[in-house]
Image 1 (cartoon, chains in turn orange, yellow):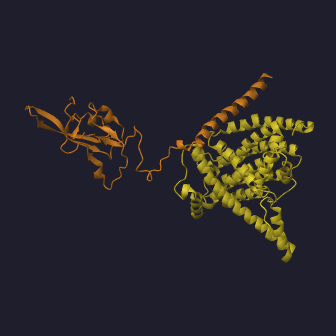
Image 2 (cartoon, chains in turn yellow, purple):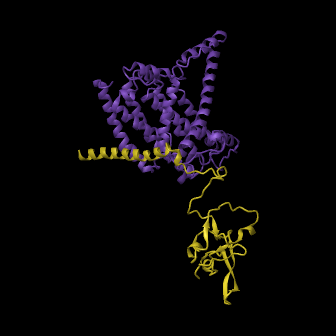
Image 3 (cartoon, helix red, strand yellow):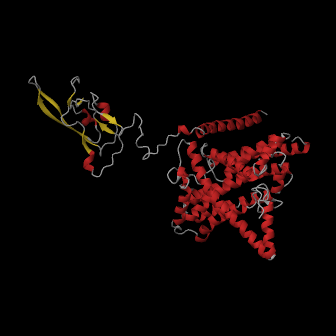
Length: 160
Length: 362
């Protein structure tokens, strides 16, 4: 008798869990607003990538053409596949001191795996991950970018 | 030509009369067979295309996707484009395959579905074959399809195909039993095996309402076993894409593959149509005892729409199963059949017999 009750309750429980599963998919079926598919080339104007998307490494500049990169080279050391090259130069400050500043922050997008290690390692937060993902170009030399804009300087309040 | 959407017997008899006026009886028979065959062919091709499109859209909605959207508005022409592509593909025969059996298998599968579809009553007077053992005929014919699947797997000279075919064989032989027993349950209730008789008996109320508890149990078992019969998910381990590439039809290409594909969807239609005929009253409108106004409104909807509405509902349920449940292992499939469905089914037959004997039904 006990075995029979257990047998029947197993069947009923099984049916109940199946109905629960169907309730989940049924919920999705009647709510087309939850659809996550993007119709990419058509919605190019309105497409907004999600916040944590890693498209490329960029260096944000403010309106005075100032960036936060001190040229320390930590990102270059942290890059696992050598996508970053830091070229520095020595300048003379108005006080007469010699100082090392960034000359070119070279970024090879073609080699980059977008692992985010450089962004994590940067002590001043000078580089971040950008949202752009349409990277197709006609020539691979175009994939080598200089991240600091020409004539840009270090921000005043960045501690070295 | 008299055309009445509520009763197709006037249309068929007027065609018969106008042919008989000028032609000998044998020629009339031949022309009528050809007409029926042609209309079945067109129906199967069109309905297959629509079902494939529906399946892709329904599946997409269940998984929060959009499905085909590019070919035509809402992707409506997608299946036609796929069909044209399949027609133009090269027919490949594998090296050292058993050529005769390899080429025969898709035709067995598709011919069997055509033979089964002939017994389906679409509306009043729209039924090609009305044997007095109609239900038995459909269940016997639809179990022949597995021979085509086994042949396809065996003749392909491919171990994945063979494993898929053998799984399919084990599965269909097991679940044939459940389908047969649910059919017997409903035959006990109806008292006839003739499909038109079963449909007529449901004019006063569908069997699922009149037969209450045992009919509902039989309906659930029929849906489960019918899903397994058509080799669809969660019982699709005969093709199990992630394990066996495509199972028994791995080596088939072009139109031969399309035959297997089409046969799967037509089988889906046949199972749904049989569920409709046996449990949901075939093309009979929904009637509730003494609500005359309600019954008249329901009568206003033509029977063919009732039939296809019910069939679409069952097809939607089976699609819902497919896109919700994960695939069962071989041992789980056999456990489900032999340890659960079969004993419940046998008990259910006993219950139904008791209810019919004591007259405890509506």
